[in-house]
Length: 394
Image (cartoon, rainbow, N blue to C red; front, side, top):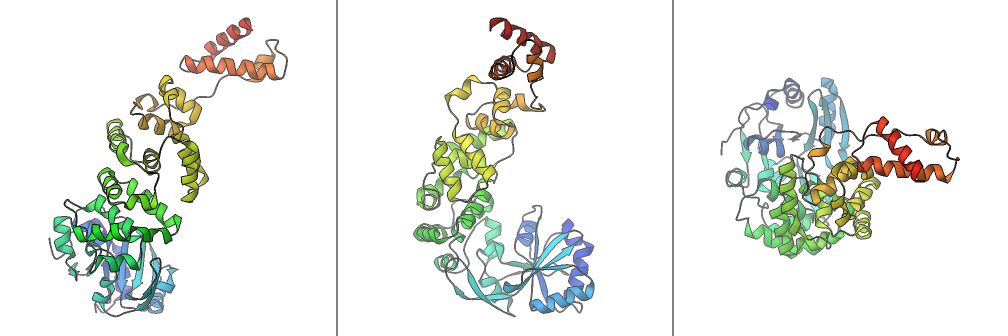
């Protein structure tokens, strides 16, 4: 694994160079890139978010940005984080820190001047890599480069201690394992996750939901979910989950060219039981729209098999129909490039045919609509013929 970052588009950004000049005008090594941007660049992956660490205190960072005319937002100033708003995207700048106290959910921190001390409080070795913004030389204090080379996801230091600092790190471990890890996984890390999994019950439901959704949105989380279930970890955050059907859904999504979707995959983990899906969604504090969609996916059943893909989309909505089709292993080709139509018939047109206003109009409209859907949504001329048929039979 190289000791310097390879050239990447983001490392040549002029706005980042201006930021570095503002924070460290004399080149004293007061700031470094850290975390995901360093890790992903070394792996040859696209970089989405850029974080920096600095020995400057938060007020010094603010003063330096203000002097340089760089817009800033104090997004987490209590923990030393200032966000610089740059043309190429925001950059979080955080003062070096060390933990003073932790309770498994939050940490009280003190600012530090020691890079190794800052690295020691991070979660995994592959996330504790720093890069000099001018030379791109990488600083590695805990074997992160070696672990990156072997795709090993490993806690820094004692895994149990890292987890007790924040039990959400258990879910983060499995998300990183699904994204970056190779097999066999680090035995000590997995053993610690299994042993301390009950501690996740003290976490907020929102934090658990966010990590679960991030995990489920990865290209293929199936092996990792199976491991979590086998270790008993999954049962501590989603006891209703059974991941056995997830590989089939992932394969169907790939076959149909449909992007991974975390909510659909969560529906796959749960039984086809709408009330249960509602309970899970409420417990995880999902949005109203997410709750409705999860319940709709849970209402899948044998009746879907008798409906075309387009009929399902008309009845449920495109996204909901995709969920039901993919969960059943069915083709979604008929929905590609197809816009859900509106029935080209109004109540007034039915009244004009001699039907009295009221319930008879609604019944006639529903009868025509059912035939229109069954025939594959024909044009208005055919709808008028279907109306004549319905009225004649009535």
